[in-house]
Length: 340
Image (cartoon, rainbow, N blue to C red; front, side, top):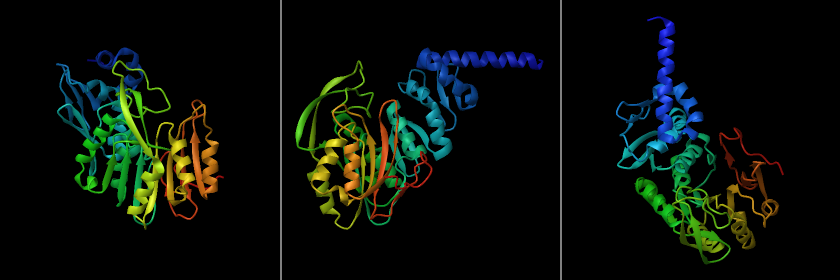
C-alpha cells in the first residue's frame, strides 16, 4: 500500500478514535481534549469492546466503569502527573488511586485530579524552611496539601475541613498513608471568627468550591448540609501550645472565609507566629483584600501575590521577615521576595 493509502487509514483511525472519545465524554468537551489524543494517541487506547486503557499507568477501565468519563476528561493532567512527577494511577474497585512516591490518594473526580496536579506538578506549596515544622491546613479538602507536605518534610500537620463528606474523603486518604496519619490531626469543622453552625447548599462534584460566602456551582446532586465553624484564634492557639518551639506554616484556602480568619488571628496577635502563609484570595463584595495586606504589613511580613484580573482570585505567599523560608513553586519559578 502506498503512503497515500496509509495516510488515509491513519486519518480514519483518528476520526474513529475521536468519535469514541466524544461518546465517552460528550462531544462538547471532546474537541479540545481530542487534540491531546491526536498527539498522544499511543498513550490512550479504546479497546474494541469498549474498554479504555491508559498505557503509562497500565490502567485498564472496563466498559461501563464509572470513572471512564473522569479519566477521559483529565487524561492530559494525568499524563503530566506521570511524565513530570512520576505519579502512577491504579484502580481499587470504583476508586482511582494516585501513587506519588510514598504518598497514595483517592482522586475520583476532576476537582481532585486538578488539585493533585497543582500539588505535584505545579507544586504550589513547595517551600523550604528550617526547624521543626507544623503545617496548618485550613480548607483541607480531601487532604492533598497535607499529604504533599509530608512527602517533602518531616513534621506535624493539622487539617480543618468544613464539608462532612469532603472531610470523610480526607480521612480515607489519610488512612491510605499510615505513617502520615500518625503525624496528622483532622478536625471536622471550618474556622471563622466565632463558633457557629450553618446550612450550606453543597455540590459534591465541586469539592474545592463549596463555601460559606459563595454560592455552590449548580448541580443535580446538590443538597443542604449542616456545617460547623470554630473560633480560629482558639483552634490555632491550641496548636501553638502543643508545639511551643516549632515553625508554623499556615495554608489558608477557605473560599472567602480567609478575611474573618485572618481578622481573628490578627486581633489576638497570633498571625505573627506564622513563618509562612500560603493564602488563596477570593473576592467578596463586602471585603477588600487590602485589609489583609495591611495586616501583613503590620505584622512584619513580605509577600508575593498573583491575582487573576478577570475574577479577582489569586495566590498570596507571605513569609515573616524574621523567618528564613522561601517558595519553590513552579508557578513563579523563583524564591519569594519582598515587593511591598
